[in-house]
Amino acid sequence: MYFCLVIKRFKLNIDNKFQNFRTQKILLAFSGGLDSRVLLHLLIQSKLDFGVAHCNFGLRGKESDTDAKFIEEICKKNQIPFQIKKFKTKIYSKKYKISTQMAARELRYSWFDEFLEKEYYDQILTAHNLDDQLETFMINTSRGSGLSGLIGIPENTPKIARPLLPFTRKEILAYAQQENLEWREDASNASDIYLRNALRNQVVPKWKLYEPNLLSNFKHTMDYIRQSHQAIDSVICQWKEQHFLQKGTHIHIDLVALKKLTPVEYYLNALFSSYGFHPRDLKDLLDTQSGKYLKSGSHRLLVNRGEWILAKNSFTQVSEVLWDVKKPLQQPIKLHVASTFENNNSCVSLDKSRLIYPLKLRKFQEGDYFYPTGMQGKKKLSKYFKDEKYSQIDKENQWLLCSGNTIVWVINKRADRRYTIKPTKNYCLILKTK
Image (tube, rainbow, N blue to C red; front, side, top):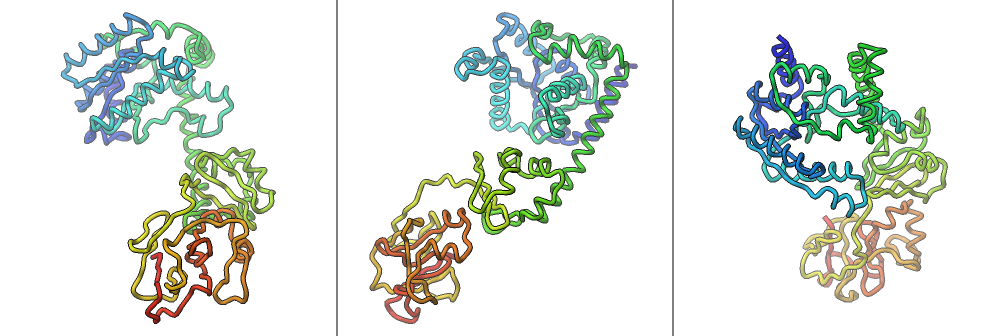
């Protein structure tokens, strides 16, 4: 009876949330412990096609090797394809100065990523259950987590699926006992050295004595938190669609609209944390003058005349390129000789006789000046940038075409009138960027 109830719930969960299991190639991360042993049995009973991967971290000597042997025998008996990899976990931990737990985690998921790509598996299955979810919730709460952290372990992601998450550890144990399943016990799980073990062995059992429906109530709480998170995500996405305006390669955000958000600290975190910025720094940036910016590992956020400009960091070190014009230029920008002239900023007609070859592409230098077409006299490039309302990022991204060290063309903007010539002349050189 209990077998029928659990397998029915499991299959229903697969049909509702994991339909891809029927068509994709799935891989079970199999430790040999109770939870993964039950998941393996349920996958077999559901007639799903899957493979097994086991990590032998070598942390318990012969016991670790016995676990690996146990897994090998089960897989062979059930004709399940499997891979077992042994790691030098303690050496890795010492080398990178991280805890043994963290070392094992990094090694495990690094191998899984490699294995997925090499063997063309679509998704990894892990045997996390509802008790694991409660423990994760408690750990994240103790560390001061936001709403996304309180959601805890996701049930389904592009890489990892957890079909046992709705089941309690008590249900899993009862199922294993009824089916006479064998599994391996990890002796380290009895130790309360680690926070998760202490919660599992000491705190949660006492809590359940005072609240017998703890896990059932907790599951409802998690559903409410997820719904709240989805609703807030929807609001955030709508705001970004309206106010994150893409202009070229940059995103422009109106500061007035940003300051109207309440509570502003929450929205700043929700809108910009994925770009690597800290909410405290973002709040300080709200009231700073133009030209100030924040820089993360991947992006820069610049204050510029009543708006923020979000741009990816440029990792290119190229600041100067020579071009002989015989072949089209592809990097750092596209530039080629054309046969016809177009009257727009992306095209220029130059006097060949005045040019020094090879032409040079470079960035702005202090003291640069040119004689802009359509203007009187010469103009400092810094003043031109200011008049054209260039942001700091715009200045850094602007390429200049030079003859020697003299500016010929502020590319895609304005040419130096000393070098321009009517495109009908025989000795003209027509250049285009598009």
